[in-house]
Image (cartoon, rainbow, N blue to C red; front, side):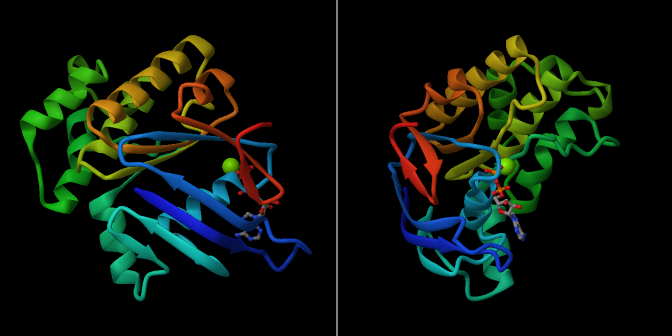
Length: 218
Ligand SMILES: Nc1ncnc2c1ncn2[C@@H]1O[C@H](COP(=O)(O)OP(=O)(O)O)[C@@H](O)[C@H]1O
Ligand SMILES: [Mg+2]
């Protein structure tokens, strides 16, 4: 469950808030896509939801957490235990093989359920890659590994910021399908920022960010 109300974020350089009394409610296990012009604040919104930076006003409830955090330690624990994050650049650890890249987040949380990780890899069709070093993979393969890594510790919520922005159309479609399918199957709440209408329309709630708030229409 994600519940956001009256969220405001303003950077000192601009005269109007980039996020301006934003409201969002996402039921457990459902998905939201966010489209909007470049620079409209999509990444900022995800960053606020992850607690990477503080909002100026408003409430965010995400998983069991209520933001703002009272300490860095609390924020770190939330991200380690309850959140999965996927970026446009995959940020895999090149020197590690696929299995170790995926198991990494689970180890941080102290839960390595090998049967679950194998199931995750099968769902994403990357089982055959498990012993390969990350830097030997194609872009589409790397992004599927990044998705598995984001889900390895069974987060309640996954935040994905333009996850297929670097991929060609066919690969992007396949990766996106995998992302939605895996999140639905694992009952993981998904928030995905994208420029692709195809990706966006698959979400339970396709939304547009404009003038600091989310709209159901472009
Ligand atoms: N840390 C920051 N300090 C100042 N301005 C920022 C910061 N992060 C983002 N911005 C500004 O906020 C606006 C929204 O950026 P962003 O959230 O990255 O947009 P989007 O992801 O929709 O393209 C941009 O104008 C950007 O320059
Ligand atoms: Mg962005």
